Image 1: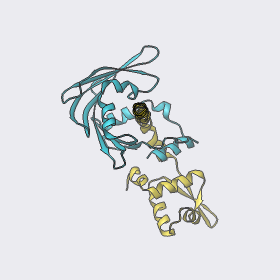
Image 2: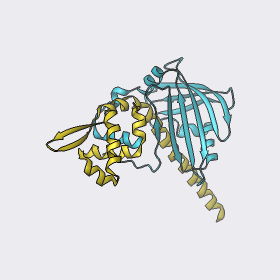
Image 3: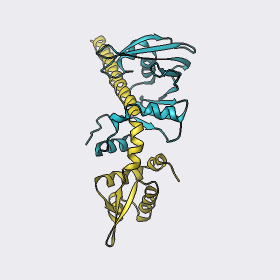
Image 4: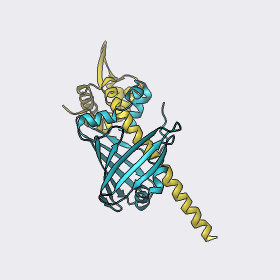
Length: 163
Length: 113
């Protein structure tokens, strides 16, 4: 059975038939620090992508109307690029931006990241992703589902823990 | 009819599913393990049955409550990839934030010396 070792878990809410997905997670760090690693380019390669890919920040102009473009490279030199526009920055509470995977152009996601300072010094991060349609959301969230579709107990246990 | 998310949003119902995940249970066993009243447990079981998450198997005088996987698998399939992406990202962010704070603490410690 899968052991959940992390003390803080990610909550994932995605209601069937809706265009939105909401993720929340509490971090043991003050809000200013969390906001900093979200908005300063030198920190992005340390957490934004999976470990097996190298993330390169090509552009990151954190202001309303500013562009961002991140490129991920695998060991075989294949590249995956993502870009978007910052719509609004309210330091240190909120970042509103768009997200687009260049492999599926035209499918844009509106992302709102909110940072909530908790009284104990921790930070609650809430990320809402709004897709252009339910079909878009389900296509994007279902990517790689052949790989993920298993019927085991473990997966169910994991599902029940994360919901 | 409630959506599966509304059904799963209730903590007691998740506890019930967790118990049924281990093996089928009788109402009495659930009442005992959850330390709740029988009417309350029955009420939750009814909601779970209506959502197709639980079914009843009649065995002589006993009614066994069993988990049905289908709705959960359906739900899980399309959630998996996106959730894994964000979980991995948040896990890394968590580790990184810890590392940054330890670094800072070390610096402060050194300054004190």
